[in-house]
Length: 244
Ligand SMILES: Nc1ncnc2c1ncn2[C@@H]1O[C@H](COP(=O)(O)OP(=O)(O)OP(=O)(O)O)[C@@H](O)[C@H]1O
Image (cartoon, rainbow, N blue to C red; front, side, top):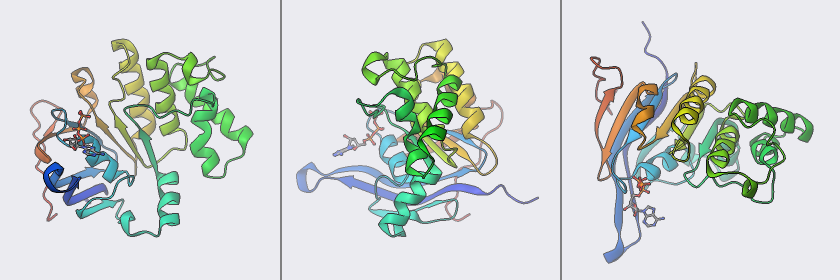
C-alpha cells in the first residue's frame, strides 16, 4: 500500500532571534512530518518555539537553517511574488492575536483571502457569510471587530483562515477565547473544513479539552520536538524520521 502523501516535512529547522548577548535560540533542530489528511497538535511550555515553528511552516517567517517542504515544495526558494501567491492560495493562518482589520466588517475580514486570490467582491462576501454561519456567527456579518467579543473575533479569524479552502491551515491557540461548548463546535468545523484528502491542519494549543480531535500530538520543549504520540490511546505514533 502506498504511504499517504506528506503535507509538511521539516528537517533540521533552526531559528534564532537577536544577536550577541540577547540572542535567543527559538528552534534548535526540528524534524517533523505531517501527512495529508492529518490533524496534528503542537503542545509545549510557553516560549518553547511553537509559534516560531508554525510561522516557518506557513512561510511567514524564514528559518536560519534546515528545510521545510510543503506538499513537496520548498517555498522559501520561490521568488517573492510566487511565494506570496502560493501562500494566498494554499495556506490559512489563525493568529493568536486574531489580526483582524479593525475598519472592516466581519464579512469583509473573512472575504480578504478570496479577494486577494481574484474572486469578485459579491462572490467573496457571499462565501464569507457562509463561513461565518459555519462558525456560529450568522447575523454578525456587518459587525466591526470592536463590536464583537473576543470569542466572536476569534471565530471570524477562523472563518477567514478557512474561506479559500487552503491545503494547509495553521492555528495558534484557536480556542483560547472560547467557552467549552463553542470550542468543541469550532473544532468540529475546523476538522470538517480543513482536514481531508491533500489537506491538513496544524494546531498549537494549551487546551487539553481539544486533544481528542488530534490524530497526533507533537510535544515541544526548548526548541525541539521531544515526542510525538497518537491521541488514540494504545496506538503509539512512530517518531518522525528525517531520513524517510
Ligand atoms: N520576534 C521575536 N524577537 C525576539 N525573540 C522572540 C521573538 N519571537 C519569539 N521570540 C522568543 O523565541 C522563543 C520562542 O518563542 P515562541 O513564541 O515561538 O514560543 P511559543 O512556544 O509559541 O510560546 P507561547 O506558548 O508563549 O506562545 C521565546 O523565548 C521568545 O521569547
